[in-house]
Amino acid sequence: MSKLKLTMACWNYDRTRALQDGSVQPDGIDLNYLDLMVEETFFRMVRHQEFDVAEMSLSSYTVSLFKDPRRFIAIPVFPSRFFRHSCIYVSAKSGIREPKDLIGKKIGVPEYQMTAPVWIRGILSDHYGVPLDSVTYYTGGEEEPGRPEKQSLDLPSNIKVQAIPHDKTLSQMLRDGEIDALHTARMPSTYDGKTVLRLFENYGEVEREYYRQTKIFPTMHTIAIKREVYEQNRWIAQSLYKAFVEAQRRTYHDLRETAALKAMVPFLNWEIDQTIKEMGNDYWAYGVENNVKTLETFLRYHYEAGLSKRLLKPEELFAPEVLETFKI
Image (cartoon, rainbow, N blue to C red; front, side, top):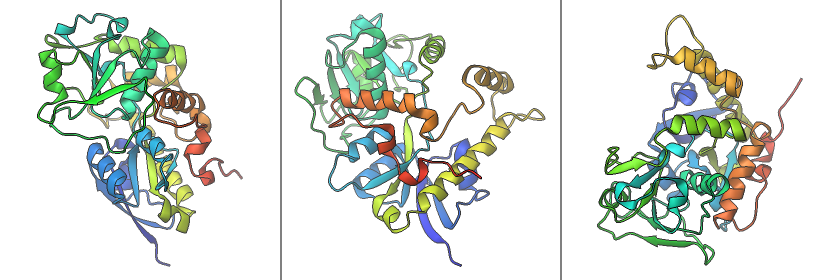
């Protein structure tokens, strides 16, 4: 019996590599895995729906749920998770020394709706007393001029967002002091620890303490399916989910290998032991049940940022077929 041919765009993560090399195959699916950088995948999927399945910014996906028609449906797989305290950069010319110094400043973001800044704004508000509407956000290309928002936004009047000049980049403006800080996913090329610094240079300690206090490991990306493909073959949500879980299980096993290091991290075994001690065996959890608090927090931040028209519940994000786990 022939399999359903689907094309999926996703970066080449260790946790998805078994899908990329074909050693794990989703039931009933002939998967064509395109290894593309996340920015390209997001742009092509959101703007043109080029792929049947794609890694997608969790924020962009959530924004899309308020568009008509709704073009995507997701499964609760999170190929990217990231603590973002390390991703707040400041200009040495800004005088910013602590989080509250951000109030009233000019803050760069490649896109206002990016997932990383959604988390950063929420964390700064919840934990450091920096209201998200206490600054002005400047959007545009971080390293290349002219980056637009992927989707049109209709924001509340108290949130101030404006585009930078088309011939400038956020990275250069941060170095030159034209913006005071930058919330981003990628380290800017102008970061040198002198003219451009991190707000939290001791971010490792800060992020670990954040996890100890909240038990949140922020979700960045999810896996989205074109809704028309899903509606014609609703079984693929469960099939893809199972395959992602199996690919991840193999990576968990590889990272616990002691005969030889499977990743180029000299103290890998110690790092994994410490991670499991602090976060448990399933420290990169998929599924809704294992991520309720994290997803609820993200959705609240998304709503408070004016990106969601109402406060969603975690289960509203995902295909209903993957909300329950089959048991014998």
